[in-house]
Length: 405
Ligand SMILES: Cc1ncc(COP(=O)(O)O)c(C=O)c1O
Image (cartoon, rainbow, N blue to C red; front, side):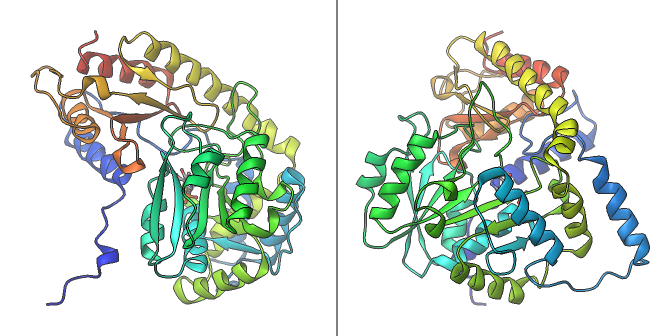
């Protein structure tokens, strides 16, 4: 039997594997309740219009949903264009420069497939969202990791310049970032954009956390910066802001030649995103800013409060480095000082963050994301999009495991 292709021999998404193990333990009913601080989704409901309008649509059609345009229904693309214009000032042609995708992840993967030839280098500042390197690999490209642990988790112009190479084709920027919550300032992005232009790079701007900001941090959309629209693919979706992860709708906006290639690829891979889900996204994205904020405001406030609560409790743990996120809903903690030391009830040491996360789950029933798969060995990511009691109890169990309590 011939072996499977090399590009398919990558590891399963570590966060999904962790969630599966946490669910297995929870379902077994053994021991204490599992607390999941590893989730990548908000815990608030989507706007009520989503369920109302989508069920009405399905009822009206008597369940007979048919294929739509491969790049999404025109109303949704027009609504995306209007929303993006309102938010960023950038104008995209809904027919030629926008594609609706099966979640933000699919949009990013499509962008990489459209841009990257075999052997091309894809620049990825680390820590990064764990799916970026596999996306480059799938396209036959080479993920090139730029370590940004010593620059506040952000790429700098010097680092981008040092990575210059004739085979560089694309650069991922994710602001606000998963896992770190780092948010680039406008000035930083202008400078990076200039260097990207000097190297003639495409920028894949993952803007999925654009509304989740703290402490006065401001979101900057890269295509809105001078000269950037023509070399940027803006990727976003309804998963995070609208809390619609299961609907699987994302979108990408960018220059026509790339979008045309993405549409062709999509037409052969998925046809169109689910017709009902497109209606749901249409209901969400059609909300005016006032309507959206009336729904979202209290939930954003609650995330702010829980971020402060988590930082307060983590801040009490000596020896644990804690980074303060400016966006998204994750906190990164540095567990390097605890590797190789006695941990948990057994006192058995662990060698790395992944082993630590699994032991923490087995011993204390707390799920967190280990950051080796995100390019940051020795770090963990904790989500604060969970109920207060879980946050406090989860951190208390982490402290006990680390022998700090
Ligand atoms: C940084 C980042 N980009 C993109 C996505 C994709 O979101 P989805 O495919 O659920 O729309 C996620 C989801 O976790 C993310 O964290």
